[in-house]
Length: 341
Image 1 (cartoon, rainbow, N blue to C red):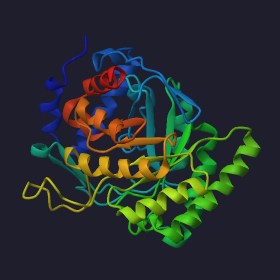
Image 2 (image 1 turned 30 degrees about the vertical axis):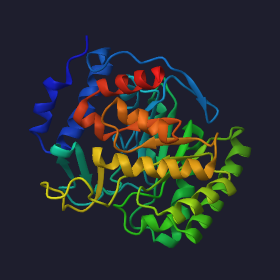
Image 3 (image 1 turned 45 degrees about the vertical axis):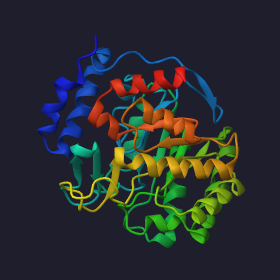
């Protein structure tokens, strides 16, 4: 019988958010190592779907960012997810932005973060990934180091792709975090063309050398205008990118105006992001047509939010901030709602 998250949440919320985050990952790893994962969450909902050449046990995944170093892959999968995405990992270790850099906005069921791709680097990341048992599809999310000039971004992304390709079920390319200076410029026409062309060439070389073609997805921002979305959709198809993850956090503050921490810089996630994210998904679906894989993420804090993502045009969904407020039961609730829709 799962322990109600309502018991743990007040204790976690009494801690600084980043401390609570680290403690939660350690606790999940401990429970899983002792064979007690079912104390944290109910059993996985069975609702298999084929997408990207992969079989997903259900349509609900974990979004990148929660486990940046891949330290708790098996423990997180045991919460009932149909797939898990870890990272963002950069070629070299980096500390990220100064603390404090993670803020709760409980009245809005939201977070603001400016973490800045803090991670232990590719070597440590891959050691963790190789230790995992891989019970569900695993996505590996790659980014660029903050010290790498934006005009050399392809170097970092290509290095990341080369490193993770053999160990990934899919690779996601994060060009949409608002917390690495100038990173979102990579979504503009010329920069995106250069990046996607270079990654397509690198992926083709890796596929030839390793005998397997790993799906490549692009993670995009919710703050794109309709013309940018149309251009991006065209570029995805032109360069053979296999899917899109929509969306990352927003720099807008709709729905949190006047709340404590609302003026902090960084990306806003949680319930206020849902409408903006769903609108981007719907526009992408209109441009990409039926059959092009879209993973919807942003603002899912209950089962109705998951259903809205699918209605907007997503094939799969991902959770992160909703877990902080609702706990692991949210995974089962969303998966069951999508299975029954």
